[in-house]
Image 1 (spheres, rainbow, N blue to C red):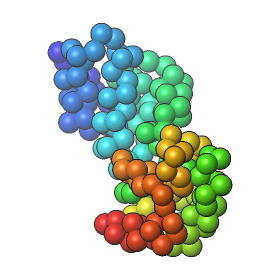
Image 2 (cartoon, rainbow, N blue to C red):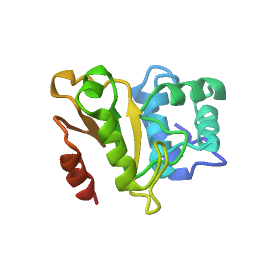
Image 3 (cartoon, helix red, strand yellow):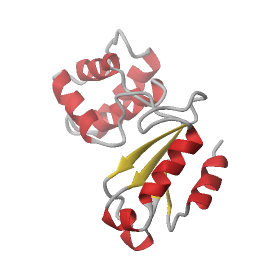
Length: 162
């Protein structure tokens, strides 16, 4: 296995992607793990240069890689906070107070949806459905579900994030 060069990604990232090649039947199948490695290197998001570098390393069209990045919620085309808050705004959550929670996040963090706090700590987005209608309203913070939220409870949870 020879490590290919990338003008944007450092050698260590390219080597890690190259080391994974034998685990996947095609370079296209390696795309998601490669994007995760590139995103981790780039501080939690994928600038256009990273998308192009992954496409080049995997011999895929840049448009295909960009399409995958824009499709999956786990990949980010813009900077995000260290803690990513997804507030469910589907019908069950709306009926049980999601709008008030959305305002709570805006007021507490001092940023609008999709923006990052000045310290880089948090960002939040509305999310169509997180599949927990019976425990609405709810949010997913990083990889954890927080259900049956109230504004006071959400405020405490956000305050406790490092």
